[in-house]
Image 1 (tube, rainbow, N blue to C red):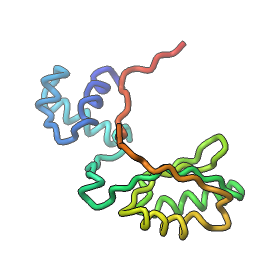
Image 2 (image 1 turned 90 degrees about the horizontal axis):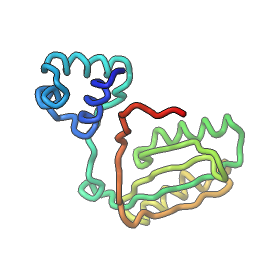
Image 3 (image 1 turned 180 degrees about the vertical axis):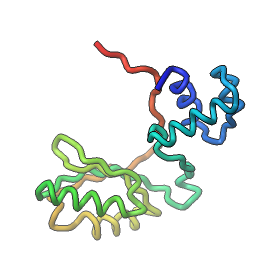
Length: 154
């Protein structure tokens, strides 16, 4: 990946509807060249997915909870638990982490009652030693964009 690819990614990840001509004008390439590079970045996995970001309130899921979970089980149980979380629509993100918790979730809900039902059925199970829920009061920054500049070493 060269500097031009990084510039294209920086522009594209914030608005995938942006036309190749607009990107090309900023990075100094033709439309065809930008399209070829985007195709290559998709095929080699650099662009992992292109998604729509929905407004949580508009779709009726105004509650976001950050949940830290300590499991009372082995590595195999961690894998089983994370696979189950992957299949749940209300779980936006699931991370296996270091520290005092094993798993960290980002969960959306229609209401606190809806979240409580989720917790009772998905978290209050024998594999979970304990969990702690933090209810988001303000979504200050939400996103998945990454810095695309060259990493600094040394």
